Length: 448
Image: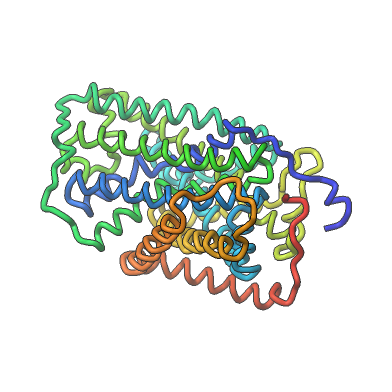
């Protein structure tokens, strides 16, 4: 980067509330409204569905603990890219960034947009093409918002997240207290017993989409105030809060509806709301899910663009991605290109196809990052660590083992999505070897 570009640096304008809102807001999207019915068809009983939600939440939380340690150590833009570079070198970090840029972030953004359009389409006559265009319109609006100063994107995130949590808690409370013919005893029904490890793994994989996002905040660590203190607290408490919300919402579903109704539902949240809101449930749920998804889209848009920025600062991506707007201190080109890729996905993919591909690719690198904690503890045992993973080394080892089992099960249960992720990674390796491996990338300057 030339001297003029280096003079423009990221601003640490994200405070504790904005940081926590990014964690909660990017985790809670559309999954909690859409995935329970799919899991019910696989699991055969409310108890196993809830067990899958707990297992997915626990797995995500152990991963969040490892990211809390790494994020406090390396409070720079790029998040996992920085962690993997420190733990494994430029090659592995580049493969992560390649997958994040081409699949992970734009796939997530597009999935939220497609999911929002699905629910809004139940209220407005969007049609198939109209739904795609509606999703793209959301991508464009949030891309433009995140070309403004980071403090604006953070404020938007805080407002949307608060609105979302209030509405989701209201849905759960209504289902538990006011649902017609509600029976809490339904929640503990075991059905035909354990559905088998493959089915249970598929249920956990489905739930993990709803938990995906706990890793996003470190991507924007270069813009967080007092990051050594703020990052671990926001990641840990945000993740625990989401787990609690998800459990209460799902208990509400099974209290309000018979299990067969949940399993056959195309919109379990709407069917649940209808038990206490009546004919207004469709409109209310469409609004609630739209706000929820838009909050997650905004958080993903804000954080995801910091990965190509950090990679470009290191000289491993086009220099344009490293250029910050002098007016807003935001990597505007990275934000815009990210939005363009997400718009293409909105046109090409359905909700489940997008989410399966995103989850599979993401968990490959989540496991690698947990390994980074182990590698750095051995290599630099005396380094200052503002936060340390409790239960080390058991917590990261358990996370790695369970993530590996999940990845293998995903290859077995969802071979097409797995093939897409592996193929994209192989393509990234070819690009890296052909264009960037010969270079000696420097450490980042403007992202610290």
